[in-house]
Image 1 (cartoon, rainbow, N blue to C red):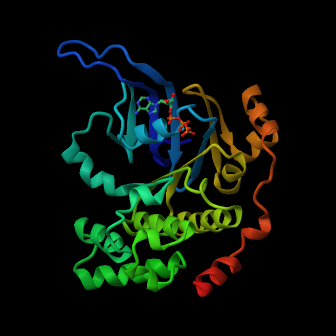
Image 2: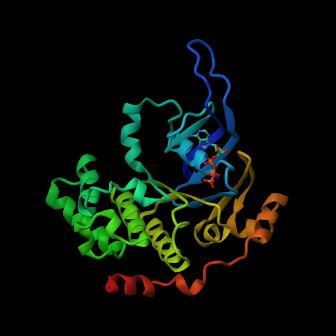
Length: 284
Ligand SMILES: Nc1ncnc2c1ncn2[C@@H]1O[C@H](COP(=O)(O)OP(=O)(O)OP(=O)(O)O)[C@@H](O)[C@H]1O
């Protein structure tokens, strides 16, 4: 893999929660939850991060976005060393690194309309020249994620779980990111809605040339969307490789155990069609 292909790269990442900061000398104590983790995400690829609960997937994702402190290692984004980059310098990069959350109810302000949730970030980041321009972009993305425009005047709790997740995707996509971290974004949805949301993400990442890290404990979800996969256990990467290879011939006994434990495929390929998305939009 050539260096120029890599958008986001972390080397030797350690994360320790609850370490006490000392005025002089290194921080001490706490619980180390990531142990020398290496991960590379190439331009335009979707990388899965899979592992059982507590294996460190979310912590790794948040470390990549510089949302948790790391105690060792380096992080590079688009060729820049962001490991210790000050907040002011990070700000313009933050727009380019978006996150979609497991529970959109927690990440979408319950008191704001969907219109406000989508329009404000565009104005804040200077991506729209004025409110009219912002509204035009929002209307276009709603069509893209097949959300009815009537949603604009509703609050998050007035939408279905799948619709809320599409608002989260629309909000991230509107900011024209290069990288999106999606953390367990379909685990609260029924299987057909899961497939619709995954399908949409696949299309968007292909059309926008996005790189994605897709965190899930569900191997069938990883297999449906990812090019490569990292398997984590107890804060370490135990296996990494192309999805097809890892699923067909896992090298690690732990991956084999995970594969044996989970019935595949959970997602009926029938649902990975466009028709049901459009039907749902016209029903709403
Ligand atoms: N803010 C925190 N403070 C202290 N410990 C934490 C914190 N967040 C996570 N941990 C611990 O770090 C370890 C890894 O957690 P993490 O959430 O990264 O795992 P995960 O693989 O994403 O789990 P899950 O699939 O259950 O979300 C766990 O032992 C967890 O209890």
